[in-house]
Image (cartoon, rainbow, N blue to C red; front, side, top):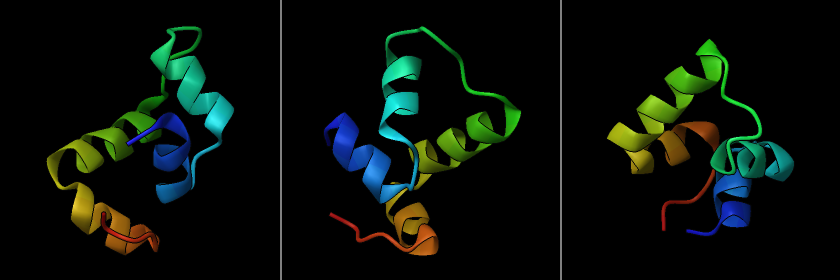
Length: 54
C-alpha cells in the first residue's frame, strides 16, 4: 500500500503520513494507538473506519 493509499484508507492527511515515515514528526499517543490497531488487524480497522479492505 502506498502512502497515499494508506492515508486515504485510514482517513489521515497524506502530509502527516509522509512526515511520520520520514521522521520529521512522530505520532502522538492517540495516533500511535490507531497505528497499533491497524498493524494488528488492518482489514478490521479499514472496515471500522469506513474504507475498503484490499
